[in-house]
Length: 148
Image (cartoon, rainbow, N blue to C red; front, top):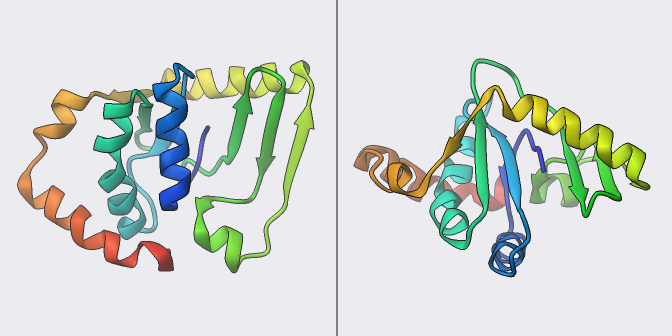
């Protein structure tokens, strides 16, 4: 999955973690910077739990990641304007296309892999040792999660 804004609901986060624990190869391609620093902080506040569950997280650098795609099992794809946040579901007018078929899934997977080559994988050990100030900012950003 690639997402410009990653502000998952409690249920969405649990579902991603459960899939990874079941052995599903869950990979997220997310930006390291955005026009919404608070959204990045909220996304970061979820990384530890996701990483502990086995989700692989990659962050892009020095570019604006605006893609919103999902590929599941190499045949089910979604591409559209919805961000991975509650705002897109509840308030924004969004359009997404669900495409069944391996040709589209393969093309989206190739785009994901090309973008991933220019991203850094976040590993749990390094993430756990990030500065306390960053952890505090992420903690307080979560209070705004439902509004982002």
